[in-house]
Length: 69
Image 1: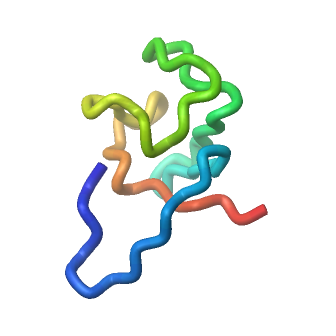
Image 2: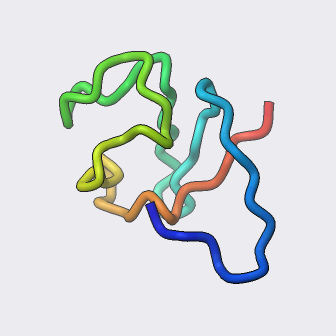
């Protein structure tokens, strides 16, 4: 995941936080994981493997935004 820009506020993601790709709108849901890339259910977004990419558009994890509930 990309490091936050200098001076930007850092907010720790909850382990159950859903994240949405701002390119293709794919939503990563930790409860579901990512079967295509062998990420088991229950894996928080912050714990995804370093080489993980959006399964729909190959976007970088730094392009994902928090889905507000």
